[in-house]
Image (tube, rainbow, N blue to C red):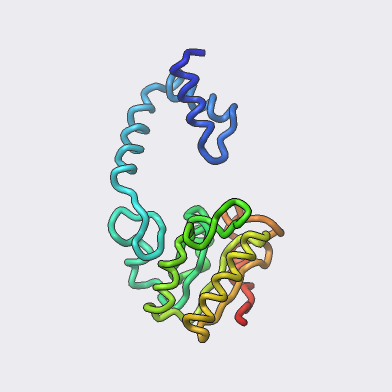
Length: 200
């Protein structure tokens, strides 16, 4: 292998979910087997890098100040679903079982890894709890220790800001320790429909 090829392979391996073999296959595909595909991929990546940003309201992907969900007048503004990452939001949208709005934390609390409240999109969430007509917050976070800690923090924040807000948690049909990204639409639909009240 050439040094240039190896550099591409090593960089691809840094992407989430990308192992040695997958990185090698993609590099070979774009550089040797189907080089005509390389230019459109590079152009699309550059265009996205220039255009895509975080939604100023919820933290999802946007090309303007607000994302498509936040500007959609048909969404139910009284319900707010809190997720860890954008792929979790996308998974819930594919389930076609939720019509409220979202808030993306971009992670979860993990003191052992040095991730505290200031590292997440929590200040924006607290502003929304004060300013928006929210009556229910759905916590759609992983049901492991870090997910539980994050849920506890958010429940405490809600109690301090607006105790009248109902807090519910999905979980029905989701295996312990799993996230939302790879759950199938039917499982997510059951999880949302079977959410339970965890208000305190």
